[in-house]
Image 1 (tube, rainbow, N blue to C red):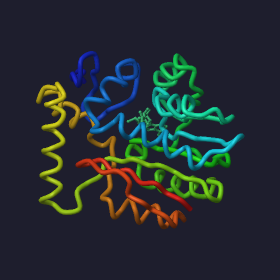
Image 2 (cartoon, helix red, strand yellow):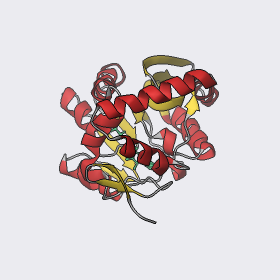
Image 3 (cartoon, rainbow, N blue to C red):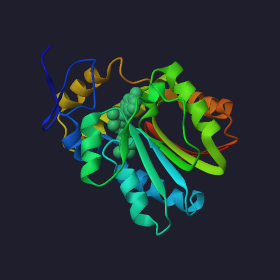
Length: 233
Ligand SMILES: C[S@@+](CC[C@H](N)C(=O)[O-])C[C@H]1O[C@@H](n2cnc3c(N)ncnc32)[C@H](O)[C@@H]1O
């Protein structure tokens, strides 16, 4: 199978998008072209930690990639925090290590024992888990979060209706092209993601969060196909 160009130095294979050594060194740049309001979301993730951390708190990042979110939370606080990320890409873990961020090798589809934590994030990562494994993880996260703790999750979502799904998807592709990606690169990424991403509608996401035990499910961010919720048990 030939490699298909996705952005600058990034290549992939069709229906086999992985966060490997072809992606990780360019990830921080690529994600800003591919995800609307990426820096705003990172800022929210860091800011929410003000409410949900105290001296000695554990903060977990599920799908931490290059450790950008943890780096920002670390820089924000003088409190002593135990900051741990999980990811199953060795190449991402190496990028995080360069920032001095502790990202541990862990397949989230097999993560069953989660340490108690007061604040957690899963930014653009649950969407890559197969539905049954994702559900298991969301339930385990709700179980492990301390009373009064908070969890910020951001996902690519499907539109709630066929017509609006078509419109927001096309607007998303327009945004990528405005950000400098070529139409061929945009389509190549679509091909690369086939069978690798399992987005849900807003209603499906919220039903899963509530079923897992989160009683406060607040939609705090939305831009076209991207939504963020602050969840409290
Ligand atoms: C879009 S990136 C997340 C970006 C990051 N949270 C941020 O805000 O910059 C998705 C991450 O999830 C990780 N991932 C995907 N499937 C995984 C799995 N089964 N176990 C662990 N990590 C996974 C990928 O390696 C990748 O680093």
